[in-house]
Amino acid sequence: MNRDKKIIFAPSLLSGNFADVIGSVKLIEESKADWIHLDVMDGVFVPNITFGHKMVHDINKITELPLDVHLMTVHPENHIKEFIDAGANYITFHIETAVHSHRIIQQIKESGCKAGVSIVPGTPVSALTELLPFLDLILIMSVNPGFGGQSLIIKTLDKIKFLDDLRTKNGYNYLISIDGGVNRNNAEKIIEKGTDILISGSSFFNSDNPAAEADLIRGNKEV
Image (tube, rainbow, N blue to C red; front, side, top):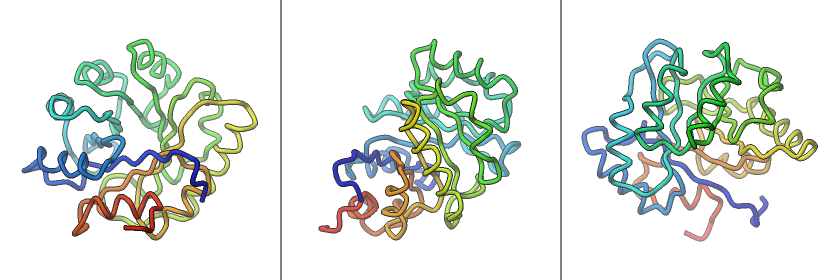
């Protein structure tokens, strides 16, 4: 593992306690996490419903951590402005749900927000080829999206290595993020592939000691 590389740790609120959002955010802050990852699901693109822009707005009022909003929705272009107004720092949408992806990226960036695109396990990296020079973030889904607590699909790690190699070869500036099944047992392998951002939900929130779990996921064995 490259110890000199800064790894961004972003717990996913999806696995937190929705009846005690303040408490869940506090756990994230106490773990010295870098970002908060917020999964917005519409029950159409994925078989689950979570929350909308008001939740993001309210969380923004109680934390100074960057908010990483992941839109798992159809027609993401219809929701960009409300999430930017709510305080999102990064907005990531799915290539599978958008026809005019480049236009959406422009819409996000012109509003002063960072733009990301995500792909599900069944979508090849080649679907992103024309967008790579314009992206701030690429989110690799390492499980089929919609529910927390799933096991990582190992084959998806090849996408990270491919994107990292392209970034180096072409001088691209995007961050590479991974979401789904990330835990202390596989994080080192994931980081070695070139990942910049580790998103963890169940492993973090279901731990008896989330702060210690965060350290283990980052690769700090001395906890």
